[in-house]
Image 1: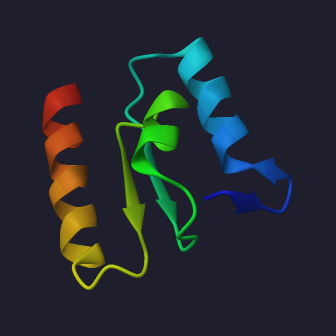
Image 2 (image 1 turned 90 degrees about the vertical axis):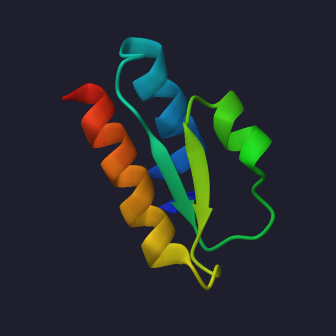
Length: 71
């Protein structure tokens, strides 16, 4: 998420990606101003928005995809 108590989720994503590009990062946010392109530029595989009506299904589908890919 972008509004973490100890910093920016975008910055944290960049740091994870800088040290370990094999870690699949799924960014989740309730903010509508963050774009998928920004999340991907920071190293996230995708961006899920909490306001989506299919949020839970999307999260499950993506988690399964990356769990299989890294297993």
